[in-house]
Length: 154
Image 1 (cartoon, helix red, strand yellow):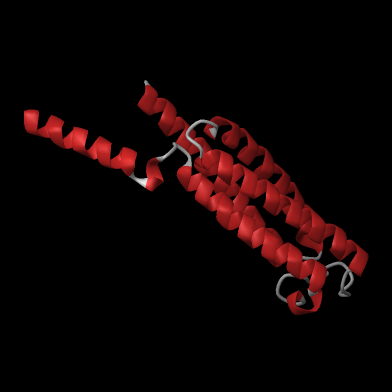
Image 2 (image 1 turned 90 degrees about the vertical axis):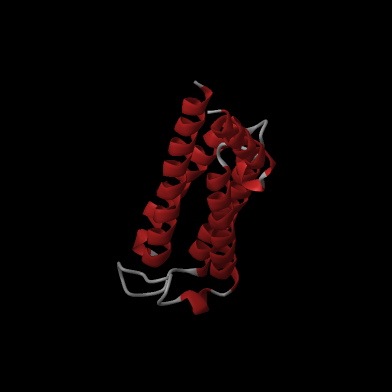
């Protein structure tokens, strides 16, 4: 019995020293960081090199023509801004002190990202699908990890 308690204590010490257990939402923070890289890359690509994204991410389903450069610039700017919001969410989620603010920020950013992905379905179905999957994953992770943190606290 004493041996199990010592093993449990050693395990808790190892977890507290591990980089991955600095807060209850570290996995969601990592997913937010990956989402930030994805959104930055796609946003910059849409603004500066939309020709290279034609056929993979950018397809106009309504007329078959490419969207105007003005529309692409607006969408690219929104996507880059979402990438910045994901970086902020990841930072807050990683923090032991501010993780609850990160949960709220992550949920709001994911909802905005889902709305943006929904609007992109007419001319960027590949990006919209990838963005929707990432945003649903973030919200699911936040809900699960927050519930786990609350359960551990009780």
